[in-house]
Length: 359
Image 1 (cartoon, one colour):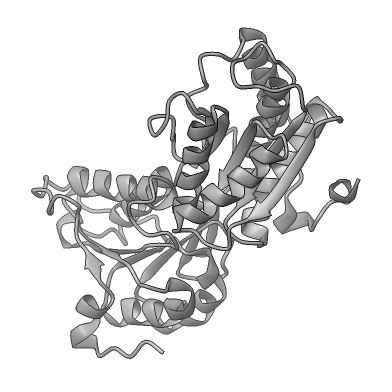
Image 2 (tube, rainbow, N blue to C red):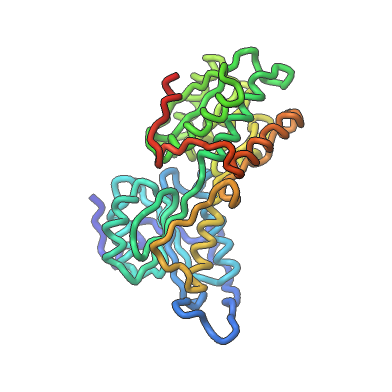
């Protein structure tokens, strides 16, 4: 159990300030005729961001969210703190409660496993504006940002199915086998996996998609071992949805001369020769928007903001230069069909698990 006193909260929960120190405050934006009702002066706004599993330095979900908070600091001059726990899953409820007790104006929660706890804690701290990533959380003072990870993952699966069939591309073998590795078996992660599988099978029903889980979001060695097992089974492209553990998937692909697909941020710079593309989830936009709305007085709570493919909430990042233009055109066509509603991508959170997984 996490035992904290309010006076010891910042120390015991390892509050991490900006990586290179706090940026110099910039002037708060002014509005003609005074502040909007409910708005908060940027200089007075106190923001806490609760870091998810895998921690800062994951070169993925947490780091991209942190870029959004850093941008808000630089543009608005807010006071912001990052909260990391050594075990956010078991300590999440205590971390949320202490964040409320510490009287932050805005608390941004990146950890998906604390959704249920937030529904209980948010009403106890009615003056705090809470934002939650990934799932709709009910609460008059909670704003949820929900991403269409299944839509972006569909495009990643489609691209993987196209590439794995083309042995003219360096590193691609004759077997139509690809893989996807999740951090945990959960609907939040399976939302990516199912979208990826659907996209691959829609392009080529003969493609086999291997699946496994690291049960960890921070240990790169576990990701590397899981990917190596898939490569031994003939996979030449593996999509990683495992945070910091997924860095091991990218390393394994680089070592084997095959491909990984990154997640959450554009991970092509990690291993340019080995990253086929990345399924980017724009948590930076959601975090920045949380702060901006708080300053403007429009972070009112009781709202779910949907960041889908059409809204730019998800997208494919840099695509490997060996991919032929005809495949890029095909993926763009599929993207347009999703945006228009012609293609419906399965969402396990709303629809449960599809029958096609057992086919």
